[in-house]
Amino acid sequence: MVGARGGAGASVVAASLARAAARRRAPVCLVDLALVGGGLDVLLGVEQDPGVRWPDLADARGRLDGEDLLARLPRWGPVPVVSTERGGGPEPAALADVVAALAEVTAARSGLLVLDVDRAALGTGAAGAALLDACDEVLVVTPLDVTGVAGAAAVRDHVAGPAALVLRRPAPGRLAPAEVAEAVGLDVAATVRWDRTLAGAVERGQGPCVGRGAVVRAGRELAARYAGRGR
Image 1 (cartoon, rainbow, N blue to C red):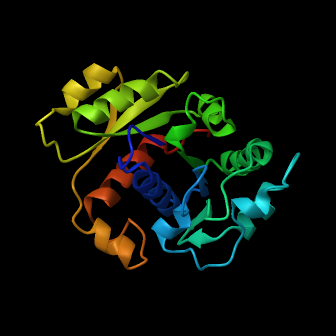
Image 2 (image 1 turned 180 degrees about the vertical axis):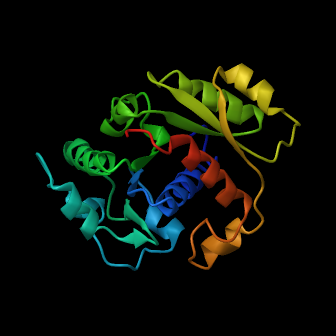
């Protein structure tokens, strides 16, 4: 998952997808690949929960035990989370081995590994950007505005494998989803409508997926898209 521009909502969509997939009884892990930031665990409301974050994994090398790693992570409900924190993001030397271990254990049980990729790393040769090439599909979260479309086209140019759009409403200039898809050259995997419950849920420490709002529905749609892959 990668945002077309700042504020696109890629982390929210990634969390929604992971939560919905976990509720389908699939093993899931959500990985924050932000190089700098407060941490995905803050968005999810689990920043005070025990468990290892990226700074704790700075020395992780070689073939790691994915099951053991999953058991040591903080959890957002049913979803284990590898989060950046103010102390730092993923170390490039550890990143590939950690992600490989998590990918192996989730794939072995027909699960899903969701990567929340830092857009700033694209085009820099950073390890997080290189992981995009190994993804089954890259979802580009794109607001329905001109800057979002331009950003999505730029992201698309850095993605070698399959990719699709997740479109975020509202559309202040009345851009239609079909127009955006044609301009960017990618199909639309889902459209997320404005969710008035989102900001309040995050501020209360519940995370972005509560009730039956638009974000939850989009997560379910995306989880259905990937259900059974790898079986």
